[in-house]
Image 1: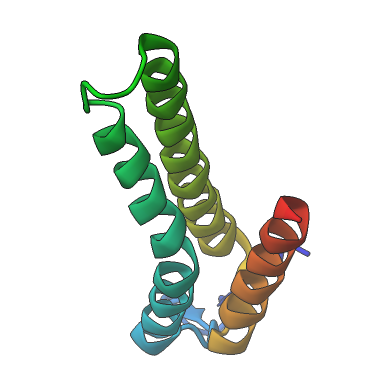
Image 2 (image 1 turned 180 degrees about the vertical axis):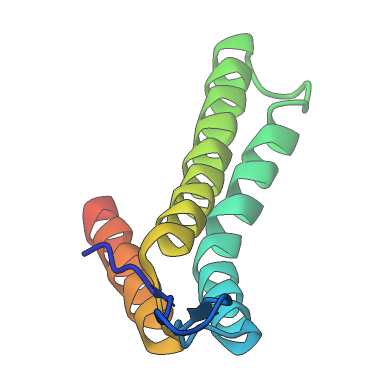
Length: 112
């Protein structure tokens, strides 16, 4: 749900933001995303590095390279979309953490 957090009283010129979102929420969000997505990013980098080994056949090297790039793309795209989504709708630290956990749960369930 989109919530408008700015309140503008009729008797004042200034408006105030009633959002309860602070830097702590973003730090927790970053920690959750890093702990979950770092595993995929590291594995993707390992696949790309493995594709440079000459002991592999050309077909395997292409598959490792493509798989590593795809794994890194999916992990970084998840991070990007989660950040954009939370910037758009989160109004409190609790909401940003709940949104991050739900998104990570869905991506984890999708992998299995």
